Image 1: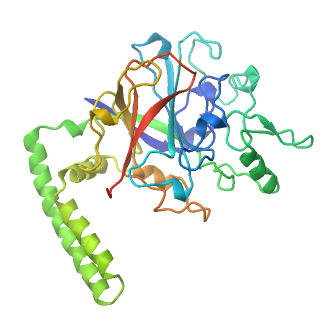
Image 2: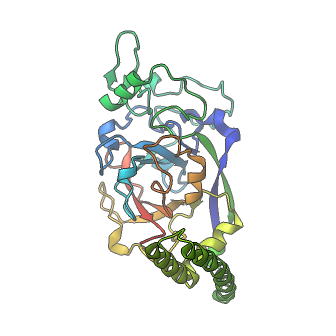
Image 3: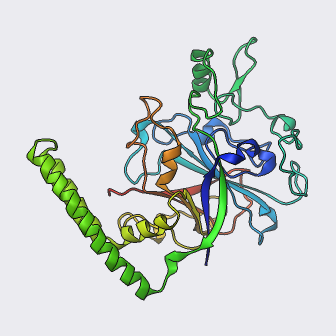
Length: 357
């Protein structure tokens, strides 16, 4: 079985606009439907009520459905440390957008991969203004001097408070935006479906290796405890987790699969099963809600791995604390029928699995 893996690709940064149908991380969304852009009301964090930030998007067209010749999945998240709860998806939003080959926005021939090709293909060409801060629909004006538009009073205030700062290409100083990178997609054989005997032998070897690594770590912990470098409660909890992990074949399989391509951040395997990090908090059938537009069941499409966090520069502000903003894996589920009902950007579902349950 073929598996598609996504990797950070900094060489594509000049081709991350809508006209090139990019897959990308961070920056502003490269919208697919250029007219019916979501407003801030559609991208509010369920936990705190503030606008979510853009995390990534994946261009994933479907050959078998005419209306999904172009198709992109967008993921947004709230960066507030207070909104990240273990195994909770309340601060994430997933949107699906799709278009047929012949549509109102793009030619029916492939784009020419040059930054000067068809700059007229944009939201502004269709009378849509975007928020200067985050790139979603802009509806609030600044003032006569500024002439910028914003999605919300919150982003307008951010702009007013920071008019003198400069924006660099990696967005390190721009509030609410994550660093921007292209995504390259590579197809590999899915080793997650190896025969049972090979998997069992590999698991046994991994268990022994993990036991030795954990023994070394336990010795270090005992030294720390003896010298009051770690309290007794923390020591007991860590020992418990180590003991559980050493025999968790799901976790060992996750490690072995990731080790084959350590820099992967996306695993795309539509209508299969995610590569789970742990045997805990795996969804059952009723855990994944049906499509709210057509009533069809949803199926797994791709997952976002924790390696993506290495590229997001989340320690740049005291409001965003690394270790709080974290996950084991984010599994994206989409409508099995890829329905056309509803808005141009349809909500889909995300399952968040953390290492600690």
